Image (cartoon, rainbow, N blue to C red; front, side, top):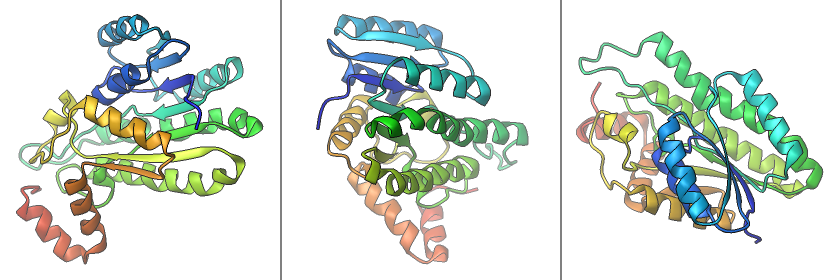
Length: 255
């Protein structure tokens, strides 16, 4: 399978997005990077350019879906996107005392984690379908398998992206468009550190990027890691829900 030469990554100023940008940066590669932290984005650009990549950066609010769709359509029209990685996301939790997730925060999370992803993919698909080529990677989470009581909205959003990506793959595969759902466990990052509960089998961003890159190269439908946590969360999804809930509480995820 040919190496992607034109790659769009959202959430590039985050841990996984930044590691992916560095992993793909090479001479002849164009990186289109979107991130919220301009300082981290600027530093990432320097690294990627030193590796020979051509880099474009953007930093608008992805929750503005009108602007997002216009931007994605314009980028698609100007250059053939070989790979689109929808990685941007946020997390919230129920609070230290279990007081619950504020509605404003839940709404913002769903707008970014779900609505923005669907809007961007819808905008880039017409040119991919016309070319009958391209690859889409949607960053979900192992939390999509079974909802954790400490982060209900986050789990719901990642379950939505998992189902969406699986459906896209079935729809678009006959047209030559490859779709993969990425399901990481805990990846070292500020967002990960802010999440309540234990964080078993913590993975470095660089390790995560390598696993994702290898999985995309092989056109895997689901890229989930690390293995022990992947297996455990998969079992939570197939066991009776009452048993899974007790296991989750025993593991330290209590509301």
